Image (tube, rainbow over all chains, first blue to last red; front, top):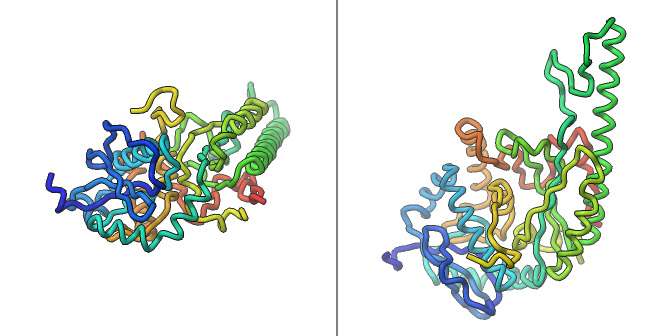
Length: 269
Length: 87
């Protein structure tokens, strides 16, 4: 590969890692990442071909889901590997520079901001917590259909009977929605108090959200000291299963992807 | 990759969770070539149409992507839009 003609893809910035990255690790474009050190900051970079990562090519590629998925997973695997040896500050997907000196210039110009965020996330990991409403999820019934709770086991005997059942079904759905809301608020409140910081991601929906999981009503990220992760997970575990019809899902630990926007956004001193 | 005892060991991670973080999270720097956040958002809107038309198998956050990070419509019936603010 002609490295000099390639662009530089930057995955993350960190303080000098205490251990080298695994030799088998490959990044986007299948090339092992390396560390570019500049005045106490490390950019983890790998060369990427200009034909794929120049502005127009990149824009076109980002609209290709397979390409996007492969690139995102490669980016994530490098950041995850880094997280085993240091506390990396992940960069947004597809942050690309012309050459090493462009990366160095960025490290220099952004030094203060990068160091501030690195200080803030140091020793922390991110946990994702999602709440799913499963079975009997309140949804607007399509015209001519009844929600399960209101579906009569046999034909209604009269119009009055029908209306009564229908009202009962609506009430049941409202009650279940209210319970889900109370549960979710309480869980988020408890986890937020425990965590150093919290962020709400948009709930996962649309044709592509995991259809078997029900309906996503909470998609949150929590910044937790690595040393307290076990307690955090216990806190989540205690909430799990206390509400039938609600499922709690945990992902992580992640590098602190959701906490790179500076402390001011989260109300943390 | 990493050993199984390692908390960061690679396991099955849903693409939707990776994209939640890589498209909305991560520090956004002005790279020499980087599409700015606004550009990426435009791309995501295009992707939303592409994905729903072409591929119903792969989970995606695009239907609800919003840089304000406010939960969108599906939360509304539950009032979760009003989730307590941290602090």
